[in-house]
Length: 107
Length: 115
Image (cartoon, rainbow over all chains, first blue to last red; front, side, top):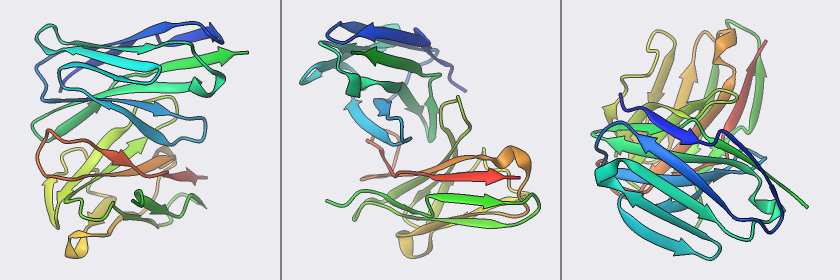
């Protein structure tokens, strides 16, 4: 199956700081999503982004499918951004989640 | 629009007992997925349905896990008998179209503890 690696594994930020999370995948994919898993375990859709760039408020994402990576940018971080960020890719009928980045934003 | 519903939210059972989880996808979503998420890991796909047919169940431990989606709407996932290593969160997701290229929406999950 496809290997999906995320970096960094852990990140601690001061409120107001910016950050970049990375997702690398080992093969061509036809779907890529970014999720935020909040402290209660709910997976929340951030972006459906198999290619290109999207922005939603303080968050933006870029996927370069030909180079097999995606980036999630968080600007002006808030304590509510804390949690685990996952990227998930699919090819064929299989879906693969990455290892996650655990983000803690401190006030 | 209502989200994906799951019940129960929490379940504690002893090993060798059986357990069932229920999922109701977003109205009109043709594709339904069950995932297992072990603490500290990303979710792992167990089974995918399109309408009431199985698209992929290659990672479902079929000796103890079973799932069905009657009438192409609600779905149940059953474990019988449960083992300690089945302790995990079981997540249900749905997407509006079949195939590989569409956006998944997740329910709140069922946290299973096997003692």
